[in-house]
Image 1 (spheres, one colour):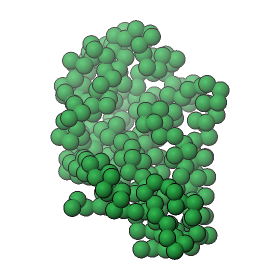
Image 2 (cartoon, one colour):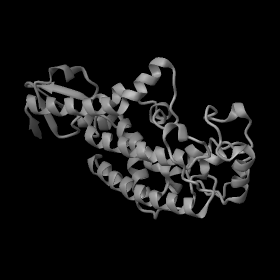
Image 3 (tube, one colour):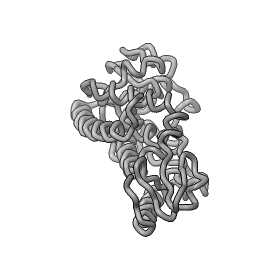
Image 4 (cartoon, helix red, strand yellow):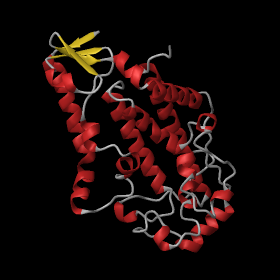
Length: 284
């Protein structure tokens, strides 16, 4: 058990909170005046994890915090002899099924090569033949217009492997996907080239708090933000008003740009998967 003196761990907790504040200031300001941002707000709306929750710092298992009496009532913490630490046995007992699923999913994803030929067409399939009120980010125009967007989808080969992207396809687009991802088949289909799978590493980190150290969760959050930016730059929307240069996946040059970024994200997300696996207790 590593013991952190109170000044040391409080400084780390304060630094973590300050960095989260820096990354989430825009989100909080927009919520106050009712504005929405299709890139920066996604991680909070889709994953339903609030800035205040991300702000709370956890050292992870095997670390005792001196003078942390306020954590005596925190979930999964125990406090004795002036020190607070994670009660790993209690966490494993209550979260065993989640731990087992995440371990299996991460291991399965790491065992497969990434596929880099989807070109972000899932966002295009979400607006294929959709009316104005059905478009998810209807406040932003389509770069190629509705007809041009539909033509890109119809000329493409769609190979979306992630159920949480596929389930938002329009009814007309769903049959165009070469794959048929399901929630039940996620373990068999998840692969590291998928942008949504890369963003999901952040989800698995915060869902397994406080077992997962907050520095790992924050790194996964940063990566997810970058991935979401690519996701929407390659989408059919014109987000130039927000300062985002489009990745024109309807062109050979755009597809090459997208695939190169996708490969880099795959390497980074796999490194985080390995780190996350390393902090999860081995199954009994």
